[in-house]
Image (spheres, rainbow, N blue to C red):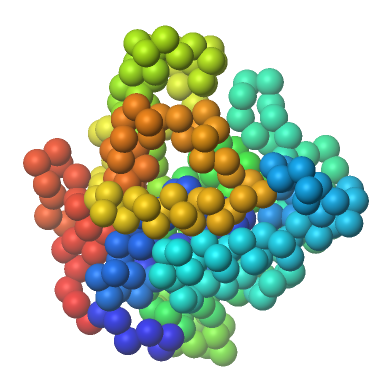
Length: 307
């Protein structure tokens, strides 16, 4: 076993930075509480957009060095969160960022041309087997990944979802690949989520303050992107507001991809730590444990016996 902590969390993400955006506060909180946190990143994000002008030479159509650089960014972000166990699926460079383009409906889809080694092209059983080995080594009680749409349709997010869910099933099967370790059944699986009601509240605050350009065209009372969930679909809320500074530092570490003064983070100025310090989840496997006043768990390990 990789860690002797009683509670063990495994997160599966597509690219460096996804983990800090989605669950950075949860990760920092659990590390501070002495729980085990393992991150598996499926690609190095080689096709990401570069927001730092002096690093544009690293782009895929130039020197193609962005993946190695983002590996360093991920190392720095994990230091900020205190996470010491972070790995690339199958080892660094096994799967390449697939890239994406935008559909006219506003969600991501696969690019017209995809590298032959792209994660989107990965054999599902092969990729899942890499993760089975990690699951059987770490023996997590809780797994966190994306929903079936990958949040906003990015092909690598969708593939990470598929790999994580399939690997969780295979890892529990005694007859599957005994060479990968003793079977392990993950007790609870969550998909990361964002609250529709909280976004609408944040948009209203922006509009009331006279800001019509942030999330331009998005109506607080109109249709929203698919990755926002109705509150009745949400099962858990982890309050990581005491660790918001660590989360923001981790986001800044991903400097080629994130500017914390961008519209995506503008809600933080209006809704405060509620947006980025309280992280939400949909429970898709296992029994919901004790809940708070709003009907949501306050701990992903709620209801689980210590092993």
